[in-house]
Image 1 (spheres, one colour):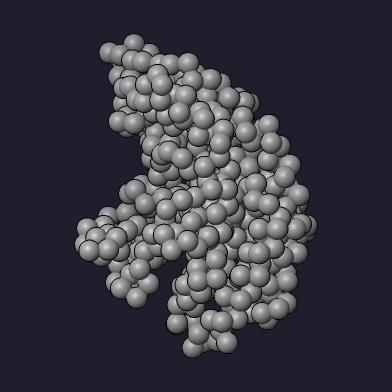
Image 2 (cartoon, one colour):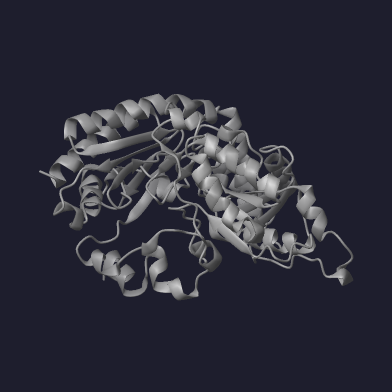
Length: 439
């Protein structure tokens, strides 16, 4: 029995309709390096989506590999309750520098876990402050924060929610978000014309909110929608004035994706919580972190008998192998000046996506920030019901690029250090894939 049949006999793949694999089977990977994934038939595929947005430094980065192997010489994992070790201390010190003032770090396994922790901490902290009426959360329209239950409850994508709707929390999502296509859009710096409408929505639920959670600047799963930094700044000012915590879900945007260490930096804000994952280890190992400040930490700091403890744990919290890779990842981001590289790629990616639009005549609403480029397909009513995005994915794989459109949104989210000639090649593959599919 070949590998594909053995796979399909036992494996239930994530975020998939398994019946699709009958006609387009899983790709058998044998090697990965830099921006490339190599398949068992010898084909070399450009990883245009950073393997679900996590391969910030590409595959098999030599320094990350060396850090992992070095830690393996000592130990791989020890219970993180009642223990510590040098690398996790160094990592925590380094993470604390990302947003001065957020110098307390709680570790977990993946993005959804970090979101759950931040939500629980914020709810618990409000209770410890005596704000017992603050039991609710809200998020932005079109938000996505993960697929564990509280995270899913604060996600506004019906495809993910609908089967579980009766069991999820029902927030009043904030609407009228001021979306932009780039940082040169007038709304980017001034959304005062829209803010009163948003503020009115916020005021209606202000008395009962424990926290608001946002994906800073870019809503990923919603189709890489970019919104005004002025909106984020105003929202932060409003939450501070009302005693409501702000949670920044930087799981996709954090550590360089938008050209800064944190997307929150675009609005020059300091949230109460920052959730990191994905690029934290450049996708080598599962690790997430929640950063917060001493005002929250101190609410829980007391004698055990007083019962102010935050009794939350994950088996692999503080995993030593993940910590070693994460620490080295932060060093590489600095040493190789990755953030500056990404800021320069912004213009280049815009030029490439505009060329795709011109040569295919099938793209609209091009939006770019940092190392994120997206555009929506122009489709007829008939085409809208034909899973065109999925067909383009199949065509692109055959041509040599791993595109995975979000519905009818084409996007590139390559490793941050992807060489420019590879991006040029990705452009050509994208053009051909669209033309072949929509001929």
